[in-house]
Image (cartoon, rainbow, N blue to C red; front, side, top):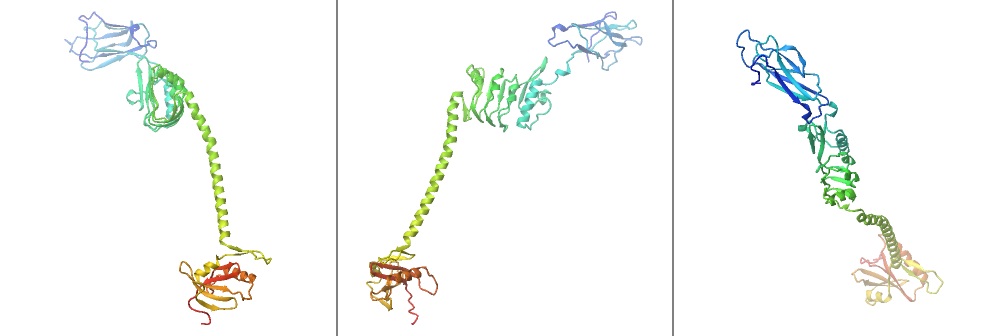
Amino acid sequence: MQTAITPRDVSENIEFTLDLESFPRDHSLGYVHTVYFCELQEYPSSNALRQFYIYRNGVLTYLQVYTPPYLAGDFVNSLKPFQASQYKISLNATAKSTLPPIINAIELFSVISTTTVGTNSQDVFAIRAVKKMYQVQKNWMGDPCLPETLSWDNLTCSYNSSRPPIIRIVNMSFNDLQGGISPDFAALKNLQSMDLSNNNLTGSIPEALSQLESLKFLDLSNNKLNGPIPSGLLKKVQDRSLDLKYDNNPDICTNGSSCQPERGSNLAIYIVVPVVVIVVLLLVAMLYFCLQRKRKQGSIKNSVKLKNDGDGNSSLGLESHRFTYRELETITNNFQRVLGRGGFGCVFHGSLEDGTQVAVKLRSHSSNQGVRQFLAEAQVLSRIHHKNLVSMIGYCKDGEQMALVYEYMPEGTLQE
């Protein structure tokens, strides 16, 4: 506003003509203008006067005579859009003016429809669906690309004065994304680069990504994706029109045929595992029954069963140790020390291998007690346990030789 132009003579007008056909922007909605004024010199006399009319393409746009203020900025603008192939501004002095017109600056504005303001609508719907699926908690609010200084994190937009902004790059690596790859990414038709690496994405790669004709870079590495890579993406990789990264996804295969064995292997696992479990359970059950049977047999083996010696009596089980007559000879040192005598026979002192002292009651051949009475007594004594009775350790039934083995009581007999 510190400079201005003015004709040399009051009879001359100021005119500006713009060829709108050469402008790249669509001018179908028309243009508006703003003209800036400031009087920079003092009038040479008190009778001096500068006043003029403002015309646009021959039509008066400011209905009053205009006089610029001295050393103060001012402007006049048109509010109604004007549609034409040329835009002509004219400043014409009035008949009373003693000074020619003056102008400091002029601006011309193209009218834009408000319906086209904002990011490409298809991109907006797609990226909002992605936001909803992954529950993005960043600054993803409002318009994704506008204003340019406040565009959404992880997005890079492309701006062109003749069309709405579009999303070109999506970088959502290290964002802890869960679930599958959103099919809505395929609706970003102008997408050139997408990085979804280092997340927890699962499932297969959508075939729809193959339809992104502008896609040049796709990074899916370090996820948990599985299944085959879509044939459309593989074709682009082979054509070198796409840089695809998918490493550290153990269950991804590069073509459909290589995935078939894996599915067969999974089927085999589904069949084999239950069979193995059933077999193991059967083996465990068999082992359990075998151990139980062996334990039962051991118990039977430890309990001695004495059978009738031909007198018609049935067998009788005794829960004590059975000694042989030779063992009794060893224990008593050939029946060296006699502890006492009774109707059954003599009682001898003995000592077992572990040092335990015992009393061996040996049946004499002159005893009136028969085999059946001996077995009955042995059976009863083997099952009686009382603090005031000596415990029976074992017995002997070796041919005609019969004996009972008790704990030795060194304190003497009841009579003593």
